[in-house]
Image (cartoon, rainbow, N blue to C red; front, side):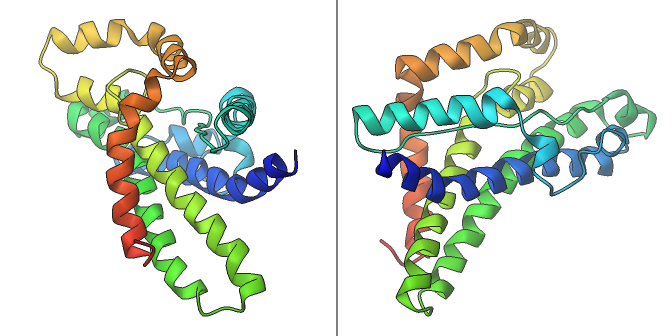
Length: 223
């Protein structure tokens, strides 16, 4: 139980920052393309509370963390937040390309996570100059934040709507293939849950995650 509590303390800051800035980036990009909806719904904020989803932010990450620690001894967790509401009609009204707008609004979240992982790697080098009683817990949190941001970026880039990768793919696919992809969106989250709890998700994510984690950890001076 102590290991679980310690893991929650180490991972919780990284999860909150990762999902908050992920959703903020979606909202900020949508606003840049002319959609006022994120601001109207109070989602252009760095306060994590408006972005928290009971299932994806708390229950599912908590269950996955406990199960992974109890079964393998290694933490494996991913989560999410409430999707930022957008209204693509504003993109067209603002004279922007619908497809280009949707692509970059969808891509903004994963790109933010990759940027956060980079900032955490740079910060790791700085905290090594602190006394050990400060450095060790902060360093552990930064490593966890790197891994969480990499996981969130790779997970969201899966080409399954309504994940960001599915939306990005839909923005570049020609008609009628984009319509076929949109047609499976209502089955998207059940598919994701089946993949996650069957173990297939880890096989899909691990190769890309491993490469990115090695890259950022080398930048942090750990590899």
